[in-house]
Length: 153
Ligand SMILES: Nc1ncnc2c1ncn2[C@@H]1O[C@H](COP(=O)(O)OP(=O)(O)OP(=O)(O)O)[C@@H](O)[C@H]1O
Ligand SMILES: [Mg+2]
Image 1: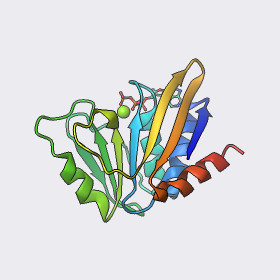
Image 2: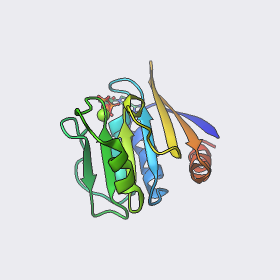
Image 3: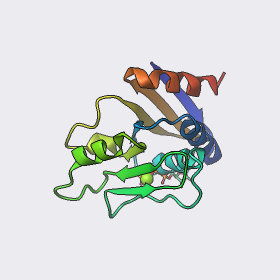
Image 4: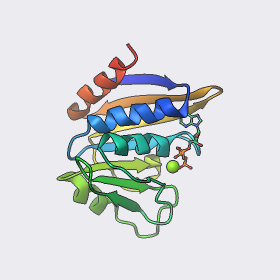
């Protein structure tokens, strides 16, 4: 199951994130991939808003993961662009699993297996906006991708 959506503006990417956050479930893993400036953090910001989190989300560049609490579910926001040496991603994946939502920027840089079931998102930079392709990996994510696709129809 796969859906490709074009977001002409940053506000549209943000809104897509809000939809994703409103739909999020405990144990959800969202893997974001795409070049610098593609909109991974913008999407995460929307997702946080969809979870009911207020406050600023910035990329956790100098730490592996930032945890935001106070929303419907806690949000674990990881950025693997500069992966700290000896970082244990297995722990990261397990720790969040029972309780929250894990978003991983630059997921393709993970030297270890991320959870095998996840939502895989490829972000492309277009001349006017961004294209986001959502892929359900695991049955829990099919409904999520279907609902994102419905936003376009
Ligand atoms: N349609 C769009 N969707 C999202 N962002 C957009 C769009 N159009 C322009 N932008 C701009 O692109 C930038 C996206 O930045 P963002 O930090 O989200 O990228 P990123 O993928 O997280 O990059 P990095 O790999 O550095 O973490 C922002 O400056 C935003 O204003
Ligand atoms: Mg970012």
